[in-house]
Length: 331
Ligand code: UT7
Image (cartoon, rainbow, N blue to C red; front, side):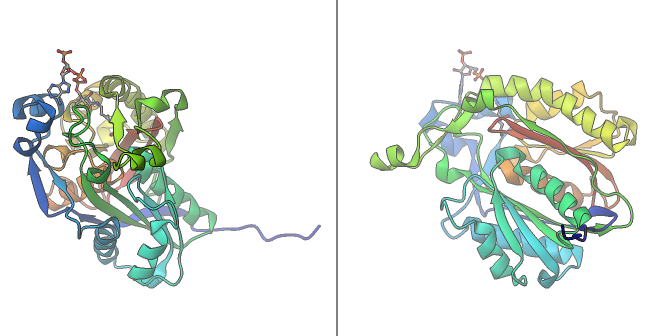
């Protein structure tokens, strides 16, 4: 038997740069309430959303991803040539193959980086960060670009009361690279396929297309709400524990922006102290699934609520059901 050389990588990995793309079209509650027999007040009270962004036809998944990625590369001071791997988390790239990561890598000008998409819904970005960290520490990549991007407006039924007011569009990206100190804590992740039907495509492509429609999303909001509000607090505390960080040492809490009431419920259940700054990007961005955490962190940094070197907790959860949480040092 040949003696293979074992792969070996960097001692640690960390987030080096962060970028975001917010679509230009602002859609206030008033624009959507008639089609779903709702009201601005109901939507604000139940979800905390006042407006969201829906991409224009020109703001494709590719366009939004490349813009967010360029921002992240500039923020990191890393050239596209240094990127060895591009991971795109999305459920709204509408072509089955190839992965959109390959054309994004090409447009950015990487040197034929490995490129693939992952489908873990709203938890996709945190899955990507965990994988990037392990790829770097394992020696498979030097620098990894992780993008969370969605155009959920394409697959949302504007007349569906359960989803039309929630889902939205946008992109966020991070560059992950080698580090002397730990910058990404152990991931706590998992799935519960028994509840796969709680958030799902309403039908398969052929059935939808036969009716001249997109295969729209459908969600049983209330059971998802209860699951996220209670079970995810435990996952967040476990991620803190595995990273050796206490709630008192935490600076920022950046949960998936699914519903403002879930954000508040998680902060309460985890007994986060007053000083912990909490991401509330959902109010005017809606639920952008895989893009929501990098978008929320980008806003916190821009508005001075988070600064480089802060300790932040990510918790993401969504269709699958899937979830992932990790502690990171803010780039
Ligand atoms: O991102 C992936 C993970 N997704 C999530 O985490 C989303 C989790 N779920 C949620 O955010 C919430 O469940 C929603 C915001 C979607 C809904 O809020 P809820 O408090 O769970 O409302 P509900 O579905 O229990 O409905 C309460 C009431 C019902 O009326 P009755 O039976 O109390 O008379 C609904 O018929 O509100 C009614 N309702 C609406 N009313 C106005 C349901 N949808 C609407 C609507 N407008 N759009």
